[in-house]
Length: 438
Ligand SMILES: *Cc1c(COP(=O)(O)O)cnc(C)c1O
Ligand SMILES: [Zn+2]
Image 1 (cartoon, rainbow, N blue to C red):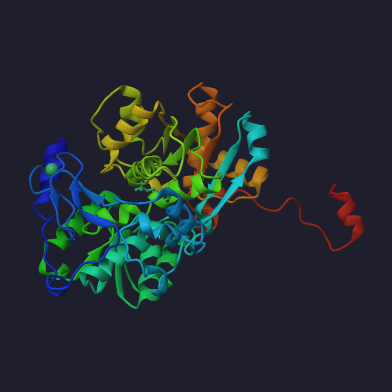
Image 2: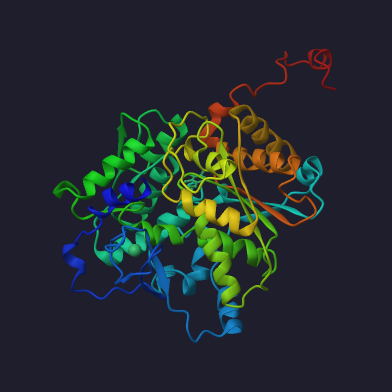
């Protein structure tokens, strides 16, 4: 089953871009693309599936000859955005000088009040990625894909999106001076639609769910109509995906170049989770953090929980689901990186868990009330899952724990629509006293 899906992808994997063949590709330390399944290597290019086995391609680096302390100094002297990690990313060394949105270096909030509510004594932190330019973690991945698009000579930036990605692509393309045309399911939250449309690119609603949108985009790539188009999460996916490593780098640097013991990460396609693990492993290999065990936990909404269902059932294969949840940014029923998420959760001693829509809303309010952070539904998923994992004994409350908030609550206002006025009064002190608020 896994093989058949890959076969479909591979037939569309090889694509040529007119202007890129003769120019030299400078993507910094990125040396080649390497197959995650069989290790087959190919030169850097806009391809995403292995020609030998149809496995996913990812970036292979040449970090040889690095000096750990020199690297640390360089990073610490770098800009307060993801480009401080340029020596570890598939981007040219002068990337910070180009017009882009410079996302990242978001706050790692020490969440003592939330810790008290959840009974965490070992230190609880919220990595708050709502602080990015378009208010979700997607700016990190799009920034990498944009560099690849520039290197390969693409003129249109595109994507299939559950909402946040569409906005991030629209904004990045506007800043870079490229055309954008992005595809979303037609029934997304109003906040996400406006955020995607306001940057002036084309925004197309597709009658279907995300998996239908994604399938459509794969067809478009193989068609002359899609020529010259860089789909950030399809033909540029190997580059796009590396952006999530910056979350791992930032968390460790913000903890004082230390690995956390436990991280709770939301899962849509599973790309972010697998690349955070890759980032942590690189930091260990490069000697930037001390090697010690860490556990990775994945979080899903019950209404779209293909990975947690497989994890709990002890399966290696992720069976697709039809999504039905308020956590629309995570509503991918057929997650491409699902099997790798299972591997990582099991290898590190973590777990994958899910929460109901009601628990998501509760958790959004809990985080807002305790820490002053207004999360989108995906943040409700990670906080809700953290609470559940502590209750069922899978997450150790005596260990340092980082919970990701990957998006801004202003984009999913409907989720907390019942929240509002405490009272309505006349503009008099008597009326105020009567309302019992004094
Ligand atoms: C896209 C997204 C994720 C994670 O997506 P992956 O496909 O698993 O990498 C998490 N949170 C939000 C808010 C997102 O938009
Ligand atoms: Zn392969």
